[in-house]
Length: 322
Image 1 (cartoon, rainbow, N blue to C red):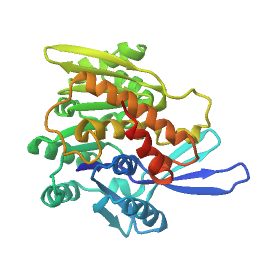
Image 2 (image 1 turned 45 degrees about the vertical axis):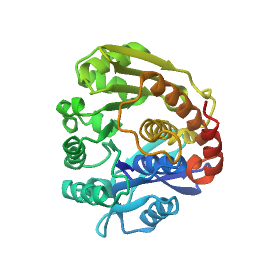
Image 3 (image 1 turned 180 degrees about the vertical axis):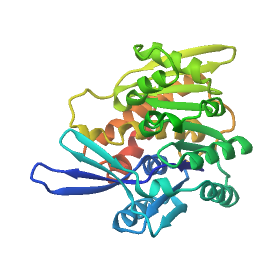
């Protein structure tokens, strides 16, 4: 089982005529729904408000077969929301900040007991309270679980929310194009570097146990990883050009990351979780394929298109993976 810990949101899009459309979203939801679309068991740990938006997010997760026993509902909170209007974006974290370290510990303990094959990987994004994400990292380290730490913009930009001591505890650190420069500045590095140079610099500075992924979603990626006694790098080409509406990119990066992690720990659909670190060749092949799958999110408007709207296409393309 892949446990996805982090923000649960509703994405609110305002059209030119002022009409609003609300879609379930949030990184933790996208991770889980992507894993489920690829045939892997998944669970979510997060916090929602007791409102219609929270019910919509929870309903989407349940419909996919995601375990939602670790989702806490706080009556006094409202579900987090991302607002998109024209080229503007703003965020209201809402209930995400109300997830506690105790919530995370209890959820992970319960999932470890109930999961048929146990917990194989934990993906943590930092769109939740600092103590909650730290508890997730600590639990994964204690249990020897494959840990992916996905650094979000709100965590990096709020300097006090990032503790560099946690970076070496992660098997994989993920940063997107948006966050990479801010992280470099935060670490006192040359923020002017780009591409492979930036990825290698961040890898050396953060020191993850295995790899650092600089992900551009459908725009490709740079992977830096330990391969025996060497550190090796790979550049993954884009799967789509930059000629799409901004809102169609919502969730594309998270879909690519989740698909990649799912392939790393579960391989083919229905296969048992692997326990050994994949080879670098396996990792790059899976990443290339995952960037391709992320392009499905551009076909329709909304953040979870690939996993909710077109799961049969998602799975069919995955089966075609060489």
